[in-house]
Length: 99
Image (cartoon, rainbow, N blue to C red; front, side, top):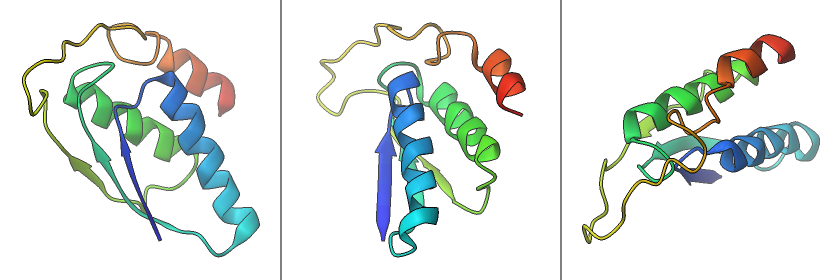
């Protein structure tokens, strides 16, 4: 069983989709839930991004748990490296292509 902890930037999105695909092929590994934290964007956007990933993968059975919206140490700053939404501000466009 696997727990995924993510700040769901576009790199994490691809990794999660690949992992969920691997679950089908291996049959032995299973994601039991996903936790979200701020990083590439705020934790609310991270949750939305993970939900979009799970919807795209038809895996809404996996629970999402919201974590902190700041660093435990208070030293990290969100840099919006992957845009305001953490997915390059293009997630709706990309999901429409996939579906």
